[in-house]
Length: 310
Image (cartoon, rainbow, N blue to C red):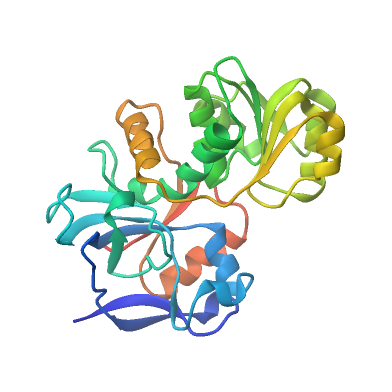
């Protein structure tokens, strides 16, 4: 059986995304086959498309996409937690979710909370897990901590704000003026309009900074941290010699798909403590995915850009 997928056969701009028929994935004993209802665009998708990951991205034709929400179509012989038609969502271990069906390792799949649409569910896994691992695993955030989240209106930022508040932190965040209302509604205690205020001049004695920007922003972030604080970057490795001089812990990491952590996010969603922010939604077809990528690269999206199939 063949199915629809959006693929690239060479690196380049959004115009390199093409609709193609591909064979339905075959699952092994520890996997499930998900009929996709929605996926989303993440910055890593556009980086892979441009060729920034090189050969590590895989072989052409390449299917992009790192989030899936849909229903179970088929389960492997060793899988007992799921059955056909279960509503689920996941961050698969390998990219390839711009397609009608996706084979996923069962251990990273979680049942979709009832209070979440498929479009919302598709907006959670990659960004939510990135935020969770940054704050909990690397930032060691605990109740009473002060946390600065850069670019709070982005996909990771909107998740991180809510998770930090759940952990009991006081949260500051940078964004443009048009996003002030959104960020305050998510729980931000100190909003910083980066066009009018220099965060490094107005903040001090912070326990953790989540760096989503790199470069000069990352360098200036050292100034706001207290000795023993954590600078966690999802973009580039912080200056280790400067960190040593200041007594700052640093981390640069790539998110790892973890089912047990996605389960924790699902619990927060069920309790109403976490809700994805969706900027816009596009169809899973050639033009839709091209437009979604163009929107992502404009860097003006609030929250996540979703692609839907149903």
